[in-house]
Image: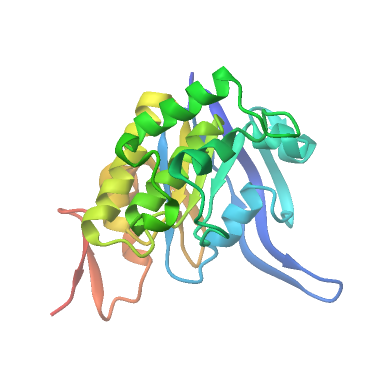
Amino acid sequence: MTKANKHIVLKTNDLSIGYQSKKHTAVIAQHINIELVRGELIGLVGANGIGKSTLLRTLTALQQPLSGTIDLNGKSLNSYSNVALAKTMSLVLTEQLVSKNLSVFELIALGRQPYTNWVGNLNEEDIAIVNTSIQNTNLNDLKHRKCYELSDGQLQKVMIARALAQDTDLIILDEPTTHLDMYHKAYILKLLQLLAKETNKTILFSSHEIDLAIQLCHTMVVMTTDNVVYDSPCNLIDQGIFETLFPKDLIGFDKQTGSFRVKK
């Protein structure tokens, strides 16, 4: 997929991912070539157990690739220090918070840790960035609430706001719509689409909500049993990629509507 005259935030070249020990190498996926462009929302989809989390862990330097390269803003991912990486890439995981006793403002303010002194004091610029993140995620009314008082959907918005406060070029979210109902799944992904446009940040998320991702994403990374394909939703539909994701006995993909249907 050509990305001429656009700033590429993250790029992989012939990337192979998986797990390696002294005795065995387990390849999850290989020959991965993707280019994540500034200001775009990118959905990572595929069947359960296909390797989405492994790919995200590799792209965020939580585990090493088996082979190939990952460049972040034109530099090798391995060349970044922990602090420099935290100023360039932020990660939102699905794990529950260790403590929900923090207020919404306090939790979002944790996103400023890469920039604050060792005491963690916020200066005027930090506070302004936190407040902007709160405004961008429509959390003004919840600003002083404790996180344990929030619904799952509200808490997910707070985690997104914390990533925004971290002020990185790339935001990566692992299953941001887990445990949410259909309305809030759509709300969160629509919010991510809006944030990518308004903040000019690159946002990559993994999800099982393939139908929603097709509607809302600029580009998608689709993991199949054979390969990893990266393209626009329209091109992926034309190529018949979504029809290869699941066994054909129960569900099928409707090219006209861009959605999956249970077979009668």
